[in-house]
Structures are given as C-alpha cells and as structure tokens.
Length: 530
Image 1: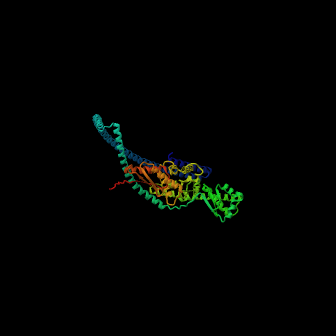
Image 2: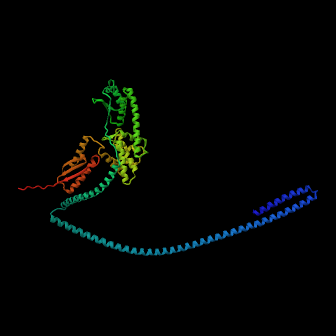
Image 3: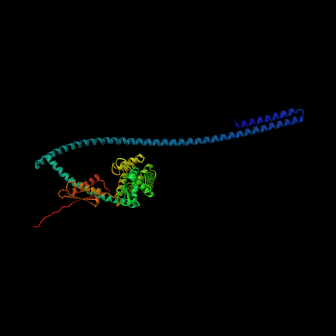
C-alpha cells in the first residue's frame, strides 16, 4: 500500500475517534445548548484539520512519486550508456576477429604453397638417395673385389695364410694399444692426481686443522692397585669362594699373580670389565670382602656404570649437535666409551669422524647435518659386535634401521667398510673421515704380528705379477717399491703394472690411509775394455 494512503487512513481514523468522543460527550450533555455549539465548532475544526492533513499527505505523496520518477530516469540513462559501451566493445572485437581471420587465411595459403614445395623437394631427395645408394653399392662391390685381390697378393708376397697374418696383426696391435693405453693412463692419472690431490689436501688439511681430538690407549684388561699384598688373600677368600663369587657375578676373569700390589680383571666385554673394576675398587676401599658384600657392591657398580654409559651417550650427541636420537641409540652410543679399536677409544673416534665428515661436507657445499649424524653412528655396531654375529658395519646399520634412522644414514653406516657398495657422497665422506681418523699419528696402535703380516701380504701381492724381480714394503707399509726386470717390463707396461698392483692391494687388504706403489725399472748397459 502507498505510504500516502496509509497516512490518510490513519488521519481519518483519528478524526473519527475524536468525533465519536465529542458526539458522545455532547449527547450526554444535550441539555446544554452551549455545549452543543462548542461541539459543533470542535467538529468543524476537526474536519478542517483532517482536510488540511489529507492535502499535505497528497502533496508529500506527489513529491515522493516525482523523486522516484527522476531516479528511474537516471538509472535508465546509466543503463543505456552501459549498453552503448558494451555494443562498442563488441563491435571492436568483431573487427579484430575479422582481421585475424584474414591473417590466418593468408598464412594457410602460404603454408599450402610451402607444403607443395616440400613435397617437390622430398621427391628430389628420394631420387638422389636412390642414386647415392646405387653408387655406394657399386663402390662396396669394387672395394670387396679390390680387397680380395689385395689379400691374394699379400698372401703370395708374405707366404702366410690369412689366420697367421691375422694373429701377427693382432699381436702388433695389442702391443701398440698397450703402449698407447699406458701413455693415456699415465697422462690422465697425472692430470687427475694433480688436481684431485690439491683439492683433497686442502679439504683434508682444513678438516684436520679444525678437529683436535685426544687419543688414549686402552686394552682388554684393567689393572687395579691394592694397598698391600696381604689383601690378595682376603680377595681370594676361604677356598677361593670370594673370587668365584666375583667372577660369577661380574662375568669377568680375576687374575691374582705374583705382581706386587695389583690385581688384574680381564674380559672381552668392556662394559662388564668396567663394572668389575668399579666393584673391586669399592670392595678394596670398604675392606669387607665376602660373597654378600660382593653382590651388594656389584649392584651399585651396575647402576653407576649404566649411568655413566647414558651420560656418555647424551654428552656425545650433545657435542655433535644431534638432539633427536632414539634413547636406545643414545645408550648404545654411550657403551662405546668403554670400547677400543687398536687402542683408539671408539666413542672419541666416532665424534672425530663426525666432525671431519661435516667439515668436508661443508667445504663441498653439502648439508653437514646428515653427514655428521652418519659419522657419529658409523661404528655403532662395535658396542654389540661381541653379542651379535656379523660385521660391525652391518650390525650398526640394522640397529639404526630398527630405531628409525633415515635410509641414507643407514646406508652410509653399512657401506663405510665396503660391506655394500657406496652409492652417495655421504658414503664416500664417511669412508674418508674414518680413514683419516684412523690414520692420524698416535690415533691407533697395532700388534707386531698384525703389522708383519700386513707387510708380508703387500710384498706377496707385488711379487705375484710377471716381470717383478724384488719387492720392498717400506714406510710402515705405506709404500711398496717394486723392482722389475727391464727386459720383460718396458716403460709402458710399468705404468700398467703399478696400476694393477694398487688395484689388487685395494681389493684384497684392509689398511689405514693409503699405500703408494712405486715401480722401478732400471736398464744398465755393461761392456768391458780389453
């Protein structure tokens, strides 16, 4: 409903109510004429007011309608302007499309002409190819005929059959190829070694310079000082009961001999040996040595050593900056504190390998974090290799795999002694860092028997090659000098021989660092003046 009509209806309703009220009031007082006159006046005033209100409402309604009409006109004009603008844009697009269509038609005509030209050229090329093939076939036939004639002439001139001539030719070619390959190998190795040695020395020297590690020589026995030799009898006990109880609890061998003021604990398990050592020291300090006291001290020693193992693993992971290792890996890593390899503490060795590998990785522009992680865990298997069958590299890889290490870390652990083939830069860096740490002066020691066997093996490998006269392993097995017979081995073959001996040593032997192979060929011309 129109607002004006609503206002009018409301006004009429108000007037009617007022009139009804007035009429009721004046009818009640109809006896009073004056009241009737006033009522008539009031009614007339009310009627006039209602009429005035109706006119005002009509005027306001007309003004509202006029405003609505003007707004509609403005909106209509705006819509018309938009429509005309859209029509203009559509017309421009149609014109652009028409121009593109004309351009495409011209391109299609040009392509058709080029296709016709290509078809014509292709026909010419095919004809020429047929001519060339015919000419080649004719040349081949002439060549075969000429070769047959040449072979027959050579056979008549040389007096040899084709098989004999082929064998002699192959022998000549083999000698030439050997000399040329030796020259190529020598030149390539010279260039490669010059560049590789320079870069490798820079990286390794920087890595070694930035790593300072202490090495302590440890063995498989622990010697404990006692205040006096009288204490040895108390340690043995009545009929040896104390020593039996001690060995049964700790799983070690207690050696009491004539050595003054000391007893020796022997065990292949370094953790059990350490528990036995702590137990014996506590018993000596306490003075009361009997089976019940031994069992009590053994329990305290187990707790103390386990706590030291856990602290050592946590400290090693903290020093390496690796904080997300599995708790079992941390504990196994801590056991390496009591493990030695050729007198080198394995936990210190693992930390050093982690530092060396991460420095070399940084120098090569690689991410050092995974390399350092693999270096820290690479000898993890040595903590349990006396309990599990297999190589410590394989055992360590299985442990790392079991406790959620990433595949590239597991592979680097398993490949650091070539139990599997290295296939990434991380694998090679761990191998290099492990070799550098083991080969550093003072890092390791080895028994005299193992040292002699290694030198004998080096000389045996070199002597097994044809043309070798004598072999000397010098520089503690770091260099092999091979003397060859000059009549059998020439200059080119000596290069090949040095390469073959080095490859065989690399494949068949385990050694720290690298072994230099030097082949010496000396020719002497001797004559006598009479």
